[in-house]
Image (cartoon, rainbow, N blue to C red; front, top):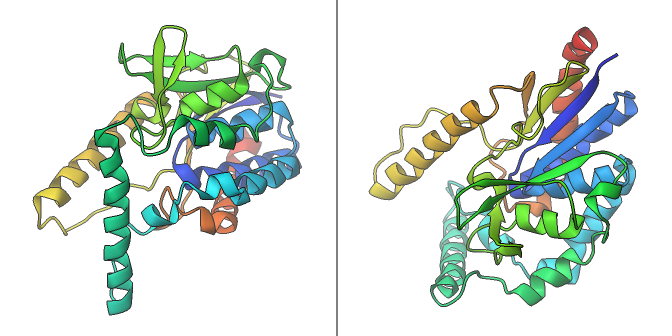
Length: 287
């Protein structure tokens, strides 16, 4: 029987879907040989590689979300920024959210990120201070080097620091210095990190994509709309190229929930579970 190598993609709160995905694989006793992760995928994947139990992962994830230090990130200010509002009250709240988010981003004119090093370190201290080499499942986290522009695969050293580097959303969290590199979110280059998982005859490589699917749109009335739409198209085609060596790429469908919607964690986890259940017939045929 073949084993499964997982590439867990980034997507902020949407990355919590990986918990539901791992739950199904664990309950079906499908062996996982390796995990690579990007951004939130590196956090979920790293924690599961440390303790391969979806229940332990679920518990720790909610401790993380509900921690007072994490709440200081004020992700609710960013959560509604892509939603289309119809009701007048909702529109007012939406505009207020945009103003608050804009003021937060304005801080980056004088420093490297909205949130400072001290707060970020306090949040990541909630995670185990283990070495990647000592984990129960081989693991790697993908980050982007701002200096060279290269993808950096972190498969040795501090798990906590690797997860921090891989999930250092540019502009929001400070870059992470590791040796002569200055690292930020791996999603800049490789949002579903299939590339670190080299082909092995005894494995199936499965990418788990938690980003929104590209959709047909007719609302391109402003220059901002066009710029954002162009970025979506570029990122979509980059992802298709970067994941071409996977045996399967699974899309976790979550509708309009965005990267900051941590208050919808349960719904997001369920979406990952649904995606894994839909994958089972394919796994039965190919393992």
